[in-house]
Length: 295
Image (tube, one colour):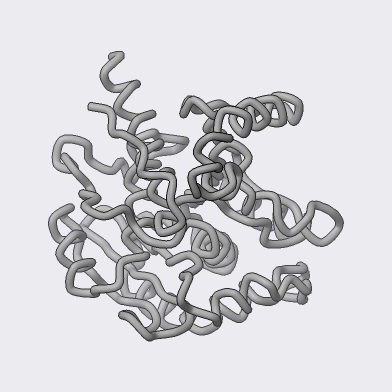
């Protein structure tokens, strides 16, 4: 069954939609940890994990993960209202380990500083976004300590927005081949970073929702480039592989034109509104459910 998109509101840009049901029907639609390529059901699982990382109540997060058959191995950073800095979680079962990072939080000024610190810095022969590097450094010891304890299982990294950038850096730093699903990711590093990450794993799937504005920054050039296989949702919610620049531009133009009435009623600007983490979760579910129903 397909789900309606969350409302086009500013709250939904920074928080999970009210009443969202995480991992709905997970027992009938299990994660496929051993997948050698892209799997729509895995994209939905990772999108839900990325959205769940935005929740404020750690007990609720643990409960949602447990309902999906996952044990909470670690809560990264300090959780809850008023806390600042990098947050995320590591969850596992006997077959898989998932590392999910939270994206930018509206009420956390430290996140805004992290996003804005676009000066490239050197690490391991590459140039990476300084703000993202410092944010990951805050929790990296906890990440590696937990993953070391759980070695031997496939590892999935994921996140939305800032969380997507942190997931990309984490997959690059981690010493074992892993899988990476990102949603609304900004650019993270230079071509050397891209090449090193691709040498470690080719299972990198980068979701973009119809010219999502955050996926356009920092500007592409010698210091920043995207990495991974682009999965592009067009203005109608259909998933496209390898859409041309002209195709993306035309799709975005038509979407923006159709959005003008919503904009007049206080909705976010079209390309910014498409960044909503809840929309990525619903779009990935709808793509998976459509293919499942078709079979």
